[in-house]
Amino acid sequence: MGYGQRLVMKLILVESSIKAKVVNDHLSRINIDDLYHCSFTSGRIFDFALNDEQSWRVRNKEVVLYLENAIAKSDSVIALTDADDQGEYIAYQIAILADKHNKSVVKGDLVELTEIGVKNALNNTRELDIKLVQKTHSERLVHLKIGQRGINKGYGPASIQELMAAEYLSTSETLEVTQDVVNGTPRSYLSSGQSTSQVVEVPINPPSTFDLYTNALISPSTDLLALETEMQTLYEHGLLSYTRTPANEWLPEAIDKVSSLIDSNGYIADKTHLASHTSVNVPHSAIYIVSPHCIGLRLRSVELINEFTLASAGVNDSRAFRSNIPYPILNIHQDIAGGRFRAPPQLQTLIALREMKLYKPSTSAKICHKLAEKFFVDDSLSMRNIQLGKAFTDRELPVLKHYVSNRLNPLNELINSEISQSNLEVNHSIANKAFEELTHRGI
Image (cartoon, rainbow, N blue to C red; front, side, top):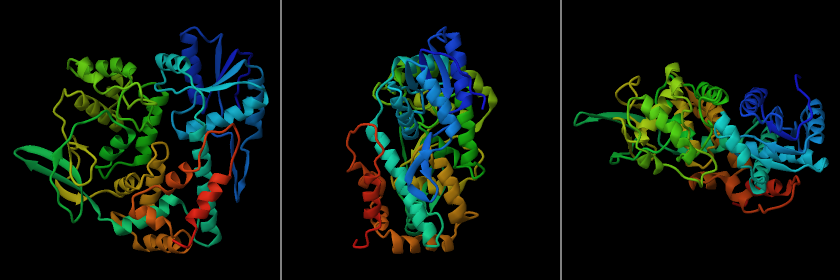
């Protein structure tokens, strides 16, 4: 396995071996590697057993034996996992192992995988967010129960996202990309196929993952999984801040990096203006480029982040417009046809997830890729697969129609109402109750 073992005072745990190596390199550079050592969990430590959604089991006994040994030799443990619900869930699983050895666990969030990022994460640790852990655990169980229901009924491994997307796509107008030129100014925006509305220019905020995905997918040649992999690789090499943030503001410590990027583009940074895009109250920062030199890589994601950053700072000619679909599009797309054309399938599904409050930065790229393949043939809807999904919903989960029509995420509504602060324990009752509500036939 390649796990290195040593006596340490504080054990840092991240998800992957690549990230652990980078963190250890930074610990050495800032001369605190005698106080900390970083290793990895290989993702989730526990998960539900296949075909047995009630059984929460160790995924890899060898990994757990190693982790327990490392935890036992440490003074305390820092879960330096991703700054999202899945990262919180893994941190909770680390805490379960540490609790067996009476060791405390705190959570740290790596906004950027650099020396400064590691120091900030270690200096700003916090307690676990148990409410988020409960929600993530319950969602995982509900998804498995629905998937098993689909298999048992001969439909296949269904998911809430798939079933709700089928209903949404069958009842919503097709999205179109429109590119106009008015008074010599190009404008790009999203619109519903049969709807018209006033096109307005909107302020540009620092980019979230959703903003990058939406703008990248304007081009039919973009593959969302490839873009996500590209961004994650840049993050793991310390060139990009955290790649799955939902935030539209930078943390104050990001401003020096953003200023450096602006200067490297030949502009003078206005830090007063940049400060208007900062907040100390976001859990992690909007995405920014850590090293201006990576502009030379000429990658799609880097180019988009650069354009968003410059436009957010008001120092270039990029402009954003929106129509009756309220997501701003930057006018930097030289590789798309003019006029009006049907939005690519992955963009259709991305907007569908966002509209139904199902979008999550950490998982939606894979979900959009899967749904687009299932529900579209070329650029047209596959009505056969749409109708199969709708038929299953009608028979087994009729309440989903209510949530789709009201643009609600049923898991948010059903699980959040049951969650309360508790100690470290696995609780299936919340998920079981949510599943019963979803399959209730009286609605």
